[in-house]
Length: 96
Image 1: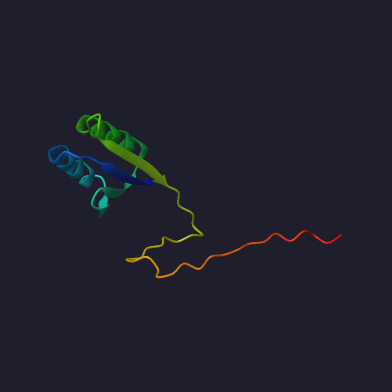
Image 2: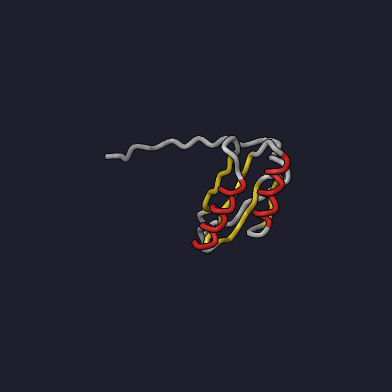
């Protein structure tokens, strides 16, 4: 099973509602038009077929696989940090 982010941009309310209802069957909404879903390959095919039936040519939809690494956790925050600390990395030539 693999994890995917599915994001869409649909201007027409009726089509947007149809896509929203379809994706609720497959995953969890994490933002208004972004879903997270854990899918088997056959489920991904079904999601794509269903989206193709519901989307129009001016609509946009993107499915992005989330690469999971056991040594990295998920980062979440409600608000961006007040200040970002820049990092400068300098390469030091090896001494002969």
